[in-house]
Image (cartoon, rainbow over all chains, first blue to last red; front, top):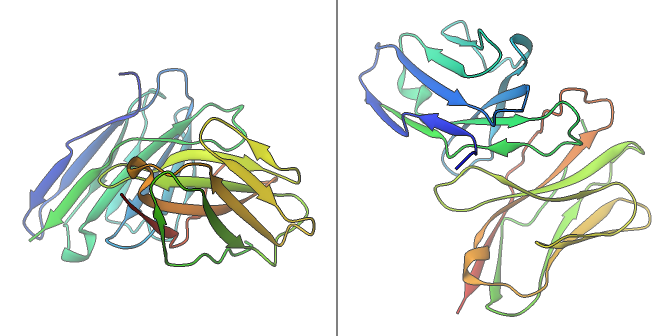
Length: 114
Length: 112
């Protein structure tokens, strides 16, 4: 399967711990997006990369959140000092630069903070 | 950004057509109308998009009102696999990064 892959699919952690999620986009896609989705809500935009440059960040992305895409391929999303409110599904999507808006999403990484 | 309004939930019978409405009365002339759906325990998937004219693809049809203040996603024959949350999203033409703003969507339930 050559779709967007995310790892891990599930993560349970204790409050205060750091967690990191990885996203591998579709190989020819130079745009990569992170979204967060809580139960019963639609996905909320967090941040977006074009190649290795982080071009947009939502106000939702607090100082405890950091995202990187060092070589313009895979990306990581790290959450430091997790809080219970961080419990959510973290979704990654990718698209080619020429896209008219079609994003390809992964299956997400579900975070539970105890 | 312009806002969309969708019913929270709808029910359909298997093998019957489904019409999912979306109101976007504050749409601007350069906003594209996108539809995505999210099956249980999966990420959203693209369904269809359009600007002014009706659009058809292998998954669905998109009917856009003449004044563009509303649109309807049409599933011609619902299957159990179509049970999902359907999101209607407006994407401004000048949204160079193609970021999408999701609302709450419509949860479609399909009865056998």
